[in-house]
Image (tube, rainbow over all chains, first blue to last red; front, side):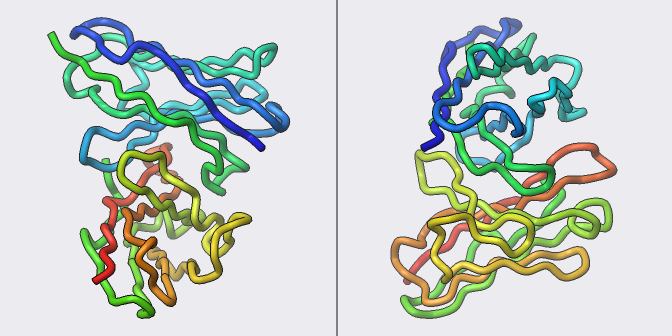
Length: 118
Length: 110
């Protein structure tokens, strides 16, 4: 059974860098899309970006200047970096796996609450 | 950045059929697939419908999806108490060059 397990710092100060990692267990790492999605407390979902197993990356234009998504195929892991965070970046961050273009995300991590506060 | 519009709430009694709409545009639903997610409080979203109409393994056939023009719909037949959750539609947007989600609908079982 495929499982995604994520980790990273949960409390940041303004201007710091958010860093999260997601490990994929079970199944093949190649052949899928890997994405990061966030959800401010009590609000809706926002797509941050995704990386394809080949290394191609797409970012949400609204965050592109601050976001980096990378992957380590030797460890079946992918990561998110978001620089210069502000209170507006406070959210639950989820990693997820995509089956194919346009077909949604079938496995999700447990979510990490990241709070930005001085 | 919610360019897909959903009703904020929907409700029904056990056994009823509930339908949730997702209104988009030609740059998203009009030219791409619609996917639906179910989310319970404090948990990650779960893929409910993909590719407009397909159910992942394990999703009850009470849940069905459809698409017409620039709108998608999720129907829950034979509503059950465990269906009380938030539901989100999603699609790729060719203009924004981003994956977009709907505003979300809270389903209440009366």
